[in-house]
Length: 271
Image 1 (cartoon, rainbow, N blue to C red):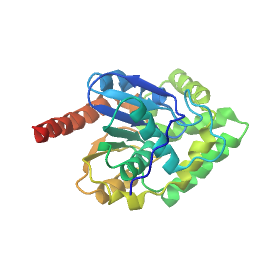
Image 2: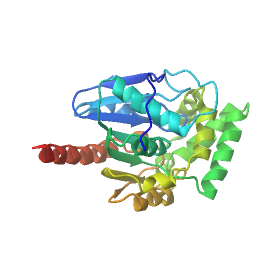
Image 3: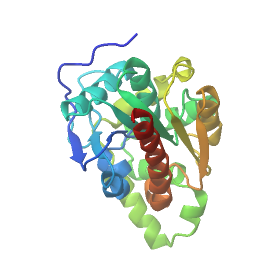
């Protein structure tokens, strides 16, 4: 059953481009700029892109209580509708995958396609340990250790292995500076996510992009999502958990190729 979207979404958002609608859902501790920045212009060349920041990220104030997946999904959908999009595809990265999946099951009349990257339906036992570690670092006073941990876990080994010590220092400084006010709220939501029952209810074309070097949400999670969604396509991208820095051109290409094909088919069916 479809729920009613909020009358107004509290989420600040980026709006770019013209064309078929595309709603973006970013990852935990990320933002639209942070997770999609390198490919935003490329997406906006062919789509009307709406990118809301979660509570406590980007331009959106932190929530007053714990984040709820249903509410967050509804708020993203409401943001797209407020920008004039009656229907739209959703691209979800990491935590944005479960958000997109929940939006698709709660608002099936609006969602036309899904692109899910580096994502998961439910944290495995190993991922739960990682989330607990992540929260421990975020709650500590040792920001340097937290930044080093984030760099080590987030990026794929080949990406880090190629760096000079000076380049690695820049990455760690960036990790320290990019932690948003709502980071703990968002990581706590990562630990609570369970959209396994949603997967079999998806009825729109879906692409699952597996980041093959990912140690955060591992390929085990990506395959679990793809195998449970009827007709889902599964493709691999050689990257760690950060495709926007490790392989942005390749990531953009996969998203655009899939969405172009879906729009072409939609246009053909409408004739």
